[in-house]
Length: 161
Image (cartoon, rainbow, N blue to C red):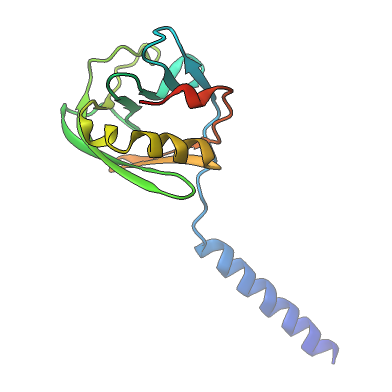
């Protein structure tokens, strides 16, 4: 009887170990802080920063503007797309990569995804609602994934069209 208990225990640990090795862990949310930027009262912006580095920037107002720090090494400028996933929805956004941007990322050259056309504007309020209600915000690109924590900004609902 003891032999069977020992064998069952070894088998259970082996199965658990194999399951843990094959399970795909979710990346931990990036350490950083969400802020509401109201420098221009007509164009409030929701910003996620790590230190002084802007990782995610979306502004409403008369036009929508979206900037996302491209993960990894600097990229050549050109067309690109990102998928922004919230707890309830996924938004695929087409735009472009640029190495000329208003954000600094230390002394290193960096690439940002930028989108300013009306495809996001048509569904902007639903996009903002999904961001604000989500437990985290995940941006998937061909170069990697950025996971940001829940948005905990008071008055973030000012970000509307």
